[in-house]
Length: 282
Image 1: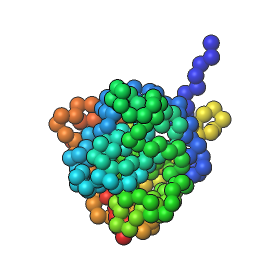
Image 2: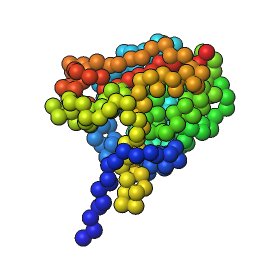
Image 3: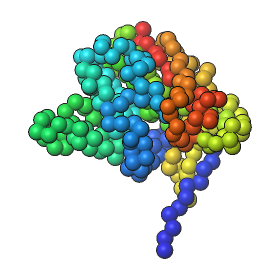
């Protein structure tokens, strides 16, 4: 009987190339499980910024929903494109980009399943949302071709060079366009990734930027996540010629009883789990 190898968790350096390769492979392998586990919470056409459940419909971080009509919006790290489908329902013209082919297959599946019977395109074709498989560090779009850009836990936490990604976003945004992205709140890196009481005691230095890496028997990274402090994130935004206009730290709502990794009502009422950066391309 062949046993599946359990990846070794460690903290070590990981290049941009290694990080990108690991992310593509991890999401392709785990997309089915991820959508099965979290799909009900994420919905088919809901724009949620993180495990706390903050909805864009409520937050309006991209601007008033009534003003999204006709806007061309780029979603980076779109996964199954739930956020993009919500944008399309507001009359926007979204493009959902992801590195993972399997995640985009789920986007196509959900988009097709959501199509009314007898209306819309042929089966297997998504009418409302354009899907693009590409690396966020090399966006295949013309300069100034989008009005808005967004990313809900997509790409930014998993890249070694976030400034490169943000400069690409800045390049494809029109002047005055908004770039809004959410990531794991940097303070959470100091705590164990546990939802219960064991996750409430500091276990590591907040200032240790060494990436978290899961690697196979040969030492090849199969999952990489990069830590940046709040100050680092602000400097990354500035280095890409964006102006930071808001930093949102969602509080845990009373209605949300779920646990998702290290997120939980217990921890969420004590420490922030998500940071959302609202930026403008001046």
